[in-house]
Length: 228
Image (cartoon, rainbow, N blue to C red; front, top):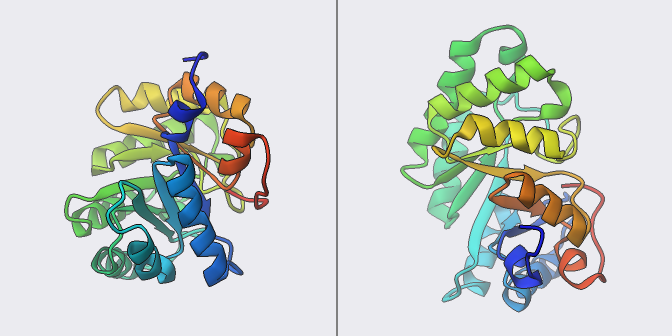
């Protein structure tokens, strides 16, 4: 995969802008950039889904949204309600963070049950789990990913890219790819800033990348936020 073209890499990127101060003009810009550069999807905060849906109507760009981060401690009821809300608004895919307080407390059934509840509420849409590897040791990484896979997620994801989530590493993506075992997909997020970074992570086994540095990755120029 080291010989990937710019277009092939672009098609594996979900162009991300989830900063709290993103303006309407910012959202319009990232949607235009998705169309210009051929990114797989746009990743935005839930409130901007209707605007993105309008701007991307008729295109193949997926509308993706994320919630539950960077803390993960909202109730399962809240996460299920938000899942239903963003789907009703027009989201094609959701990324969410589970309750790692439960995981660290060894309340594994609660941890897995919450994930399964969100998957059920998504009604067949793509669900990606933010596993926040930056706060887990190697044994915990493997267990959290295994539980998420068993709960029915579409993608295992190493990090939200926020807070203690950490950056994508070749080692972590290889671990997720091994656990996925061809049954689910792998998304990489956090610290992917250059074309070389992207190729390295994709070569390690990532099926998709989430980054705010998308334009810089495919052109060598442009701005990026400091997260995701």
